[in-house]
Length: 90
Image 1: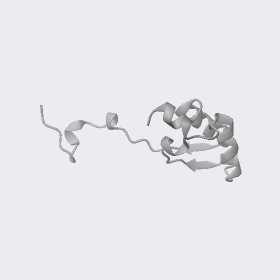
Image 2: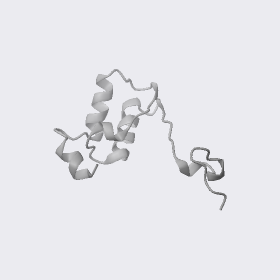
Image 3: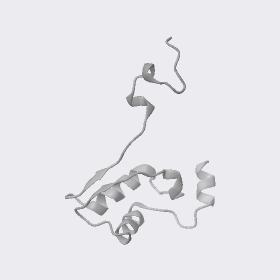
């Protein structure tokens, strides 16, 4: 989906501050440890993108908190190990 389409379907854009506020309303407290697993596409339009979300999380837990975020990227593994689909040796 293009950014223009994302903006059209978003009533109110999410910002770093509004994301932090929402996390706190959900009960996330300063100093806590939290695991975050999410899809940016489910947040609609975020002013500042992934960086704003990361900073909002850091703001919510503060300096004493811990955030664990699994990242799934093909760039951290050797393609020779890929099984589905297998990668040609060349």
